[in-house]
View 1 (cartoon, rainbow, N blue to C red):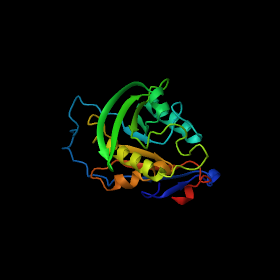
View 2 (view 1 turned 60 degrees about the vertical axis):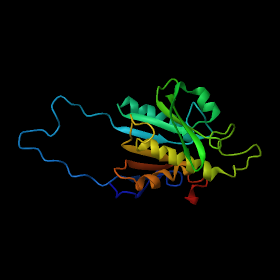
View 3 (view 1 turned 90 degrees about the horizontal axis):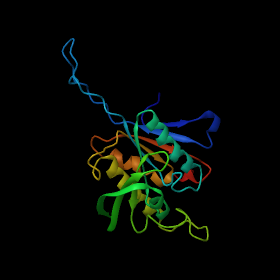
View 4 (view 1 turned 135 degrees about the vertical axis):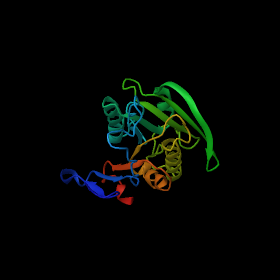
Length: 219
């Protein structure tokens, strides 16, 4: 077990995969009198709540392996009775692919109108939040223009995604749900753990780099 924030490298794939974990300070547990439980009788422990933040997820949108993991891992966690949910940009193709879509919240960040949708990923049934703004929810490739050049406002777009994802994780936009753990993935959500580190009663965070050969060294 490593200290919070310490990178974890898989020896067999050290060049392609890196993960960091950070947990909030542990609270002191209340002490119950001998022979008694501090949990009221008749109550049940609720499932762990995990927010999986990514820039793509199969089958809604895919450019590479990140989408495969983002599509499969939350579903696998839910099979283990974990309340895992996705948060993604509301690309037009993602909005078209989600079922039971509803608007959860409308707000503004950095002077840009934001709309948060909630829906369900088809087949897997994983709940998903989709973040819509004029710049973030762009049709076509999520990262590149038609000439194969990175969009000039990528840093702005995905900083916006991180800000909204942090608000979702803290229960600010969907009061009915708050994350215990947030799993951020690749540079697009790299700002998310940093934003959450400043929050009171913050969730634990996991940050995974899926391929160090794809420019992630800039982190």
